[in-house]
Length: 483
Image (cartoon, rainbow, N blue to C red; front, side, top):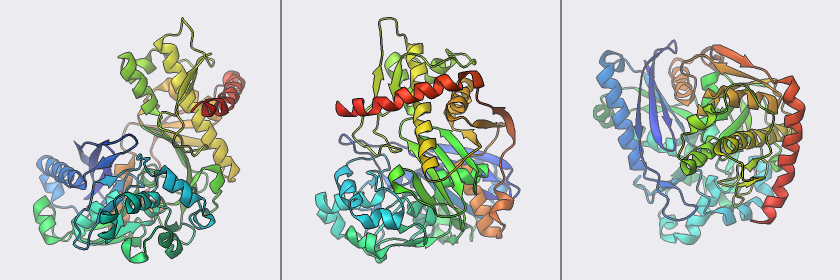
């Protein structure tokens, strides 16, 4: 038996699976996010540990015999966070999360240094880890002076479980300190932010074994002595493991809180100025590229909050038959934007509202705007030479057949919707644990899910959506001008 953990922004999810990959049980626990100042987003790592105890206890209560046979576990985690500990391993301050934008000035300064793009293969985005540490050095010098090690969120859980300071290539690639092509920390990039290689964790591949559970942790959690902790990886890379997107031409589109268009890569071929992320995969010898939209279903959630209607009801009001683009235009930059604009201060807008516009028309515009942003991501991926013929659709937004038809037609790609079952980051983490403990090849374990339905672009509407996307793209400079 194996456990896959998905350390999300709002909660921890656990899957208990057999070596065959069959899911035996699942459990979830929530925790809060603090926003003490505008643009800040923080979490107490102790809450992750508490959540870990909760989900393990729930699995033990439901499946005692199976939990007694657990051989290994691995964790998927949200990227770019900064957990800072002192020489004794004590947390120095709340973790700064991926969606925290306080270090936008520091990010711009680092990005202006040519070595960052040249070595890391990526723009230094405000959400990345390196600029957060420069911010701490400037604004919390006492904390920075006591810093012994900075790690990613899921790495803190592994540290708590094993006492070992490690990270994996996929998570490290989102810090701006990794030589992503060489899969090694860059001493030069660390030095540029006031750090050295002794203040970052030891690197492993996602299938690498961190070590066994500490004896007292095993007793506290009620897990078998000797249970192995496998390195795991960054959430999107591990989600790719969960749906079998490992190599060239394999990819997915995710409509979650944020939106992601991801493509597996057999080699390292970055083009940083496209604002496409080029990162190490969670499996050895592979990379991936992705475009990121910061507010995908979060845009529909926002509309739901201000209209008093649930996001599901807003989507359902459109029915299942795809309609031509409407006159109302929505730019989903509620939290700034990553691909292709790299703009943390950009904000969203509705255009062409009139006296007859109702919430259904606004919901339609929101879904179109998010889809157009993902088309921007596809175009940016194309600038790097990456091509996709089809994608697997994952995330809560893909439960809407209308949105899937809209995506397929806007992207010009077939969208495969998986059959009911597990195929996300928690399953990907369990698969990494299986590979790490048994030595099985990722290609044998990380197979694609069964596809329930394939949604093809609607040919009669492709020209209309291409034209509407063009209008959408031309809106950006005007909206930016008024920020």
